[in-house]
Amino acid sequence: MSVTAVVGLQWGDEAKGKVVDLLSQQADIVARFNGGDNAGHTVVNPYGTFKVRLTPNGFSNPKTICVIGPGVVVNLATLVDEIAMIQRSGIDLSDRLWVSPRCNVVMPYHPMMEGIYEQAKGAASTGTTRRGMGPVYADKASYNGIQLSDLADESQFAEKLHVQLALKNPFFAAFGLPLMDFETVYREKLEQFSRVHNAVREPFGLIQEALAKGASIVLEGAQGALLDNNWGTYPFCTASITLAGGATAGLGVAPRWIGRVIGVTKAYTTRVGSGPMPTELKDEFGEILQKEGQEYGTVTGRARRCGWFDADLVRFTAQLNGATELALTKLDVLDTLPTIKICVGYHPDYNGERLWHYWEGDALWLEACRPVYIEMEGWRQSTKGVRDFDRLPRQAQAYVRKVEELVRVPASLVSVGPGRDETIQRA
Ligand code: GDP
Ligand code: IMO
Ligand code: MG
Image (cartoon, rainbow, N blue to C red; front, side):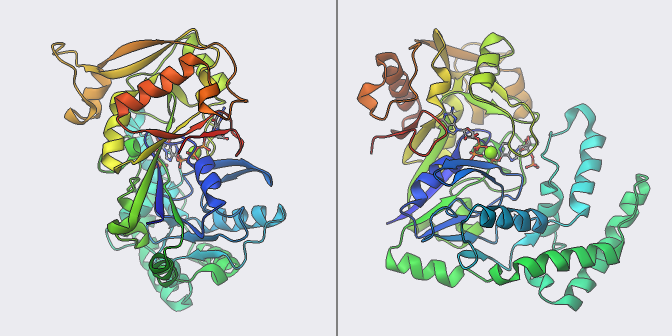
């Protein structure tokens, strides 16, 4: 079986983009199945450095077909810009992009609604990327969404947009915000759609044919398991299913086809936005991780919160995804540290008797938990140039092995830099 899901095992930004770009060199199809332009996947390859939000990371290989499945919500403005950016860099994507007409469209009122929700929650806000993800998925779930196929039919689109603006405008008025003008939204969306409409075609048949032929398909997850709408730190999470299982519904690839699940995890932990993060460091070590790891959000530019690797969380998310292997990324960021800690479980403030685990509590409970650490010796030398596991410093090898032992999944790939080649492949 040659379907590989690549999913994040933490709170996103684990370097899924880099791993998918690496795999895309042998992939017939790379497909996104969840999220929208809240994602920001960075790749550094021979064509340059790219930060993509919607386009699947197979665009750099001229032989790879890029699919956006119905589980993805599409902001047309982002898609138009991204296609232009990729074409400008000399990569021809015109015949290789397939976007399902079933994708829901992010409308301009979705980020506005999200802004109102976030403001109302004040200090308890989720700290979203403000891309309208919560409202667009809510509209989808409550049968109020507008799909790309609606834009192909102008009168159908007009009818649906009238209804939605009649529902949304009183809400904006109640909060003293300007109302949305039908004509402006209608024209803008049709204009954007006209630029991508050639790519809007249902990829289901193409994927089924590829599966039957045993073609190589990479499923590119967005966000991470701890942001999943069911299993993440709700309500500090995202609106979609971020797990390997989400690919089945989000793309139409049945579970039996997915033979390989690569769980991507950093060698430490980061998080953007609000919500519990037991191993967060607010000291000089946190600053080192942020500086060495260049931990700033791709979409919003916000500084990412940094902390030690949390093996309890990653064991849980590896189980949740059925990870068959790990891609352990950004090991080089730990290069200068004298000692490195790993969280192995929690002591809640009300019971310190035994080690507790993430899945036993909710977000508030996790916030109050005290992480229990083991300590490892650092290696204090650069790993950036290393391409062979046996050439890593002894302490770095021990660190990777400890992660594998605690998470209970082997690391087939260890990443020591952003470049495609800055990778140790062990499989
Ligand atoms: P994604 O959302 O999971 O694709 O991850 P992002 O692209 O948002 O964030 C990962 C960041 O780390 C990007 O800027 C990558 O270029 C960079 N990166 C990836 N792998 C490595 C690595 O092994 N070491 C270092 N130092 N940077 C890396
Ligand atoms: P990639 O694919 C990191 C976070 C936001 C916020 C929460 C909800 O690059 O790993 P949303 O806009 O989705 O409603 O925000 O989820 N978030 C991400 N954090 N990486 C991402 O994507 C993220 N997508 C959303 O910061 O805390
Ligand atoms: Mg990212």
